[in-house]
Amino acid sequence: MEIRGAVAFVAGGGGGFGAATSRRLHAAGAKVLVADLDEDKGRAVVEELGEGAAFARTDVTDEASIQAALDQATELGPLRIAVVAHGGPGGQRTLDKSNAPAPQASFTRVLDIFLASTYNIDRLAAAAIARSEPLEHGERGVIINTASIAAFDGTIGQAGYSAAKGGIVAMTLPLARDLAPAGIRVVTIAPGTFLTPAFRNADPEQLDAYWGAAVPFPKRMGRAAEYAQLAQQIAENVYLNGETIRLDGALRFTPKGA
Ligand SMILES: NC(=O)c1ccc[n+]([C@@H]2O[C@H](COP(=O)([O-])OP(=O)(O)OC[C@H]3O[C@@H](n4cnc5c(N)ncnc54)[C@H](O)[C@@H]3O)[C@@H](O)[C@H]2O)c1
Image (cartoon, rainbow, N blue to C red):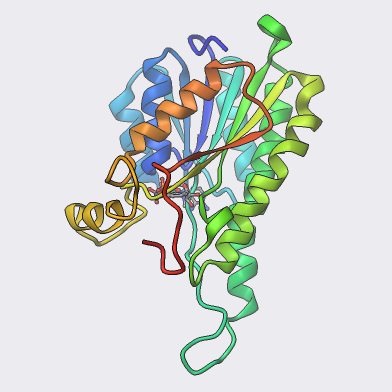
């Protein structure tokens, strides 16, 4: 797809992956709607990008909020790219140290924020993209979801997170099949460990050394710009569809991660 002239909707656009992808797509000529719950972070990205970027305070767990942000995106021009890269809560061990079970609510909350919200954005974004004129090959647009390598080799404490991310991987093909008649592709990125603000309150150099040591090559954490690079490549390559791409330097998690 030709990115120039397209509108991109980026859920979690103020975060590590979201901001980097907003920057990259904007530099490639897209108009970008940065949708994020955090107004300061989202507005900072939009101010940095300047013309052709707009912010919508969005809660991805609220359907009306997603729809309002999508409506704002389509006012910028034809929506063709939706990137789903919002964050959410961490998980917890199924039994704690005294063998008490984790609350069921923490599991369903993780599923709700990561999996159900991704589907909610996907279906609403698909309806908006379907209203854009078809391009070459009959293509109207692409949806890029964010899973994690925890979908395949989840660590201790990641039952809920792995289930949610595994769900995103599992729905990639049926979504691509559902949306094919509208000329909309669906591709999922499954990142390894990336140096983003998701790792709060930790020294970046120490993080990079700790997590990077477990990565076969290159021996460091990933950079958000590398996620954004893949997002652009997915948008540009019309033959990529219905697949999950690991972006992890060949990292495989051990039970404790690294
Ligand atoms: N960083 C990593 O190593 C890594 C690895 C694998 C997968 N991921 C996944 O990538 C995604 C983004 O990760 P990141 O590292 O960029 O995180 P991040 O914390 O840097 O950014 C997440 C953004 O989402 C926003 N957000 C949180 N809740 C929201 C809500 N309810 N509605 C709208 N916006 C909300 C936050 O304000 C933040 O700006 C997450 O799904 C994460 O699970 C990250």
